[in-house]
Picture 1 (cartoon, rainbow, N blue to C red):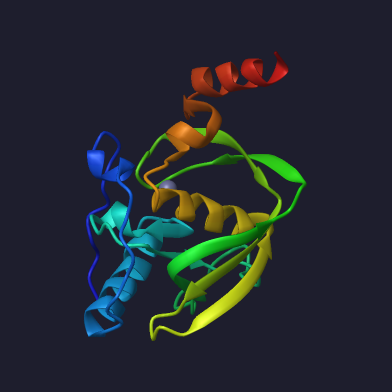
Picture 2 (picture 1 turned 90 degrees about the horizontal axis):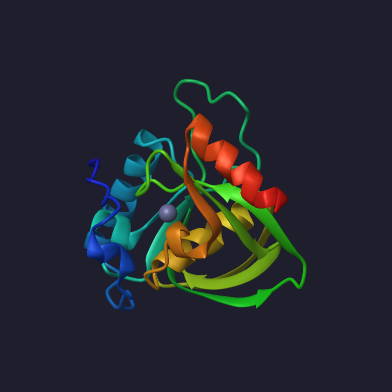
Length: 177
Ligand SMILES: [Zn+2]
């Protein structure tokens, strides 16, 4: 496994639409394993293909559902790989929460999204599965899925701001108005 370079803000690759994955081979497995390692090393909960320079419809998330608050040494992370994902249903109810993105370090956005989603995707062997998710996992799936269509939190945020005292203050003011 290897840690890959995370594509940063300003790189046009982040606004491109990804192509479907057609080969379910060792190269794909290596890419996914590298993405797991890269995401954990960067302290993230999700990472999409374009963020490591791969314009393919895939992303990985860390399923934090049963994770302890403090991650012990040698912890076995539970990852879910989503290949060629499609969001097939969304809840009517929406929620607005702050999100960060490994491609926009030091920035946050308040993003309004459906509170729950149903997603259909293939795993690394090409097997289709369906998953319903809400909370952090549901939000993470929607954030990563947006990346596959070239949409970042800069576009999806109600307000996008630098994570500084001034930035947070401006965000709070925007919320009140
Ligand atoms: Zn992101």
